[in-house]
Image (cartoon, rainbow, N blue to C red; front, side, top):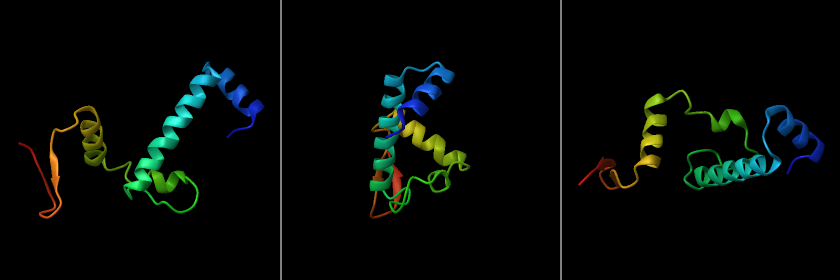
Length: 87
């Protein structure tokens, strides 16, 4: 994953435990895997930050993703009509 001395120095400088750092890294990797599986980000190559941040300036999209994460089943996707609906 990371070099032990680099990780230790970063964690020490940021006042974060190495276990917490590894947990956050694991969550980040898992989230990136889900985004790639959904074809939201490019699945080829490394996790280039420019490719991952492509939609970061689209505030409506970012807010929609946050809402859908915090409130699951708020709406559903009608793939045939390409729209969202709620019941």
